[in-house]
Every structure is written in C-alpha cells, then in structure tokens.
Image (cartoon, rainbow, N blue to C red; front, side, top):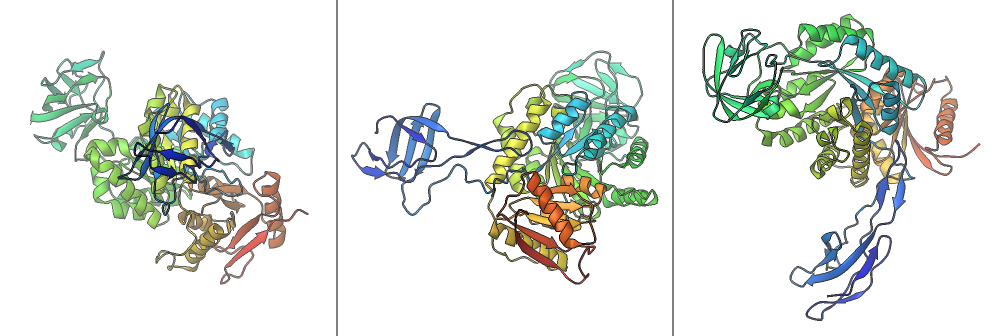
Length: 571
C-alpha cells in the first residue's frame, strides 16, 4: 500500500507502488480529465481537477489499481501496458468549437413567459419554444409568440423556433371539491354521468369510456401514480378496486394499460388551435396521441389548403402509435418520444427500447426526433437534478436525438434557467465523448440520390480535416442531410429564408444563419466567412469545408455538386 499522494490532471504519475507482496508497479500515464464549464450558449472553460488520494491497492489477479480518495474509491486502470488507460475527457470538439449540437426544447408557462425570461432562456440555450395548448388560452400564447418573434428579429445568427403542441383527446376524471384519498383494496367507481363527485365515485369526460374498458383492465391515474383494476361495469358505470392508492384531485388523466381511447386524434379544440398556429406562422405542430398515418395526412392536407409551411411532429405516446409506427414515421416530418403516456399505456420496461427504436427509425429517414417527459422532473422543485436524470439526458444524446425537451421544469418550475443550464452542460459534455467517424462504413443510405452522397462524404471529409461545414441553402434540405450524418463540428447553414432559418433550429448540429445571397458566389462566400470571423466562430488559418449541393442550385449548374476546402485568410 502506498503513502498518500496527489494525482492531478494533465500530470503523469510515474511512481513505484508496492503491494502487500512487494510487487513493484509503475503507472504511466495517468488519467487525464478536462471539465467543461459552460456559460451561455457557447462558452468553454478548462479546469484542473486535483484528487486527494489516501491509499492505492493493487489486485494481482485482475491487475487493476484501485484508488481510495476522500470521496470514495475508483478504478485507476488495468495494469496491462497494451491497454490504453481511460481518459476522463478527450473532447472531440476542435478549434474550440464548443457549440452544443443537441437542441433544447423549452415549454413556456407561468415561470418563463415574461420577456425577460424568454430572453434569458434563449441565451442559456433554448432552441425551440413549446406552446402547450393543454394550458393557457390563445391570448397568453399570442404574447409568447410575439416575444419569440421579437427576439428572432434582432439577430441573424440566433433563431428560436416555435412549436405548438396540441392537447389531443384526453380522458380525464371530473372536478372534485376536495381531494379524494384512495386506499389499496378500496372499491371505487367511474361514471359517464356528468357532475358526480362522491367519496367512491367520480365522473369521466368521455362518453364511450364504459365501452372502451373491459373487466380485468388496469386503469392508470396520472400516468401511473395510482392504479385500479376493473371488476365489473354497467351501462354508465365502471366498478374498480384500488391497487395502488393515492390522492385523486380534479381532472386527472386516465389511461387503460395496453389500450388507446377511440377518440379522434385531432379534436375540435385542436383544430381551433391549429388554425391559431397557421395564423401566427408557427414552425412546428406537435400532434398528440397520433394513432395512425391517416391523422398526419389529414393535417398535412389541411395545411396545404391554407398554404401553410408548417412541419408536423408526431407524438408517439399510445399503444396504437407503436402498432403503426413505420407508417406514422414515414408520413410525418419528425417525431417526439412522449414517454409519459407511452409508459402508462405500455409496460414501463418497454419505454427505453421504444425510445431507441423511434430515434433509429427517424434518423434512418433523415427526420428529426425529440426525447421528452421527465428529463429533469426533480428540478421543478429542486435546484439540482438526480444523477439518474443526468444519465437520461446523456443516453438520449448518445442515441442520436436531435433535441431533448423540458416540460414542467421551464413551464412552472422554480428553477427554469438552472434546468436549461444542466441540460446544456450535460449534452455538451456527452457530445465531447462521442466517436468521430473519419472513414466510410458499409451503407446504402446515401446511394438514393446525389445530395445524400455528397452530404455523407462532406461529413467524412470535415471530420478527417477537423473543419466546420458551411452550406448555403434556400430550402434547408442539404443542411438536414448533413445533420443526419452527424459531423463532429458545427454545420453553419446560411439561408436567405427566415422560415427556413427557424426550422433548422431543431436539427442536431445545425447553426442556421440568415444572409441575403448575391448573384456572385464568391461575394457571398466572403461575406459569410467575415460574419463568422467577426463573431469569433472562425479563426485565421483555419480550414472550412464548403458544400454546394441540394434540392435547388444557387450558383451552380443543376448537375454539378461541389465540396471545397478553403483556408481562412484575413483581408
């Protein structure tokens, strides 16, 4: 056992340690750790971490070294010279490119609806402002929309997209004058008669509730906070026995495990809200409880009649949506993994697997995907997250989600800015650990058309040469394709369309920038490079990868696709 010593980052430990059997062991090199501390959207700071070590033990059987520090034990490394020691952080970001690539969706509510808070959320890292139409009215949401548009009008290199999230067909219990306490084993009933509130019976807001449930079904209240088993039913009453008790308050959400209600996915209220979104030119709809692709086609046909260019994000949160997942993903413009209701209608152990499958399906066909619900739930009331929540964010980032979402944390939580900062910092740190692809792998994904092939190879080239990517786009299509292949550095997407700029705010790795294009390609290149230099996003001597390809040619012949690598020069 060795004497107490110090191990600091960026230092090499070359000290002979003696075990209880007097075996001499040399440790070199030591672990290195870079801690990334971020202020705002793109700051980075490197700090040294010093660990106070009080004992080091070796195990000759496993050839491992265990260090006992003041805050617990950790494995230092495997005593095998052929094995590279683990490095705590080897940031993959290059040229101090510390911009977070995974986007953050923030739900706007009482805690975040002021002009001051929207500005602060945007500077802290919000990329998309979500309007939850289950709460508030059109007047309050109009104020939020106007504030976000005001913020967007002030910048050419910052954009906050607006997402309108429909309420959808929700089955809820009725109003109760005071909470009803349900105890395990107690008999309790739900009736389709309106206005009933007794200690053993309350109303539901859905007339076909009795027809939808069967004896033996499990009813979940508030996403599983309470559960009841259906024992019998009459023409207007469902009789249950409480399995897991709790406090039943007014208008609680009801699910039947493994089943979806037969209500339409888009209700009359939803259509009113959708029209409100058309009038205000929101960027995305998040459509709740989508059961099949017909719902998506119906909404898209309506938007065509309105000449509205709004993307449709489907919320995967019901048992029916899982059954029809391939056709739904194919029909939509993107998806949200809404894990709350998904975990209520299906066994909770299936949710992580479904999350990964939905992300994979979306990425395979170049569509954005958002992971939502409970990501930092504890921060509604507490200033720091649980360690499991931190891991949840990291898993979503590693699985390839375009965006991660905050709901109550920013809508009505006590610490909305801290929640955004935690999400920002964890995502950035996780991205720094992801591998960089510098060689082509066996894939047919890019063989469908020329644009896909160029996006793939431009990403490989940028990764190999450690360069950011610059693309000029009118439709956003090439920026979306580049995002799909996840280059390790930023995709600077210049566009002369404000609507496209805001839409691209959702896509992983894309930094949309507004710029008017001139007829002279070289003039536009020069102005774009100057803008990036002025904002300290590029430095003299740095190389950049320019991509000219996509659905609509700007300065090239339609049949010509170009990838250029240029060196930044001042003047």
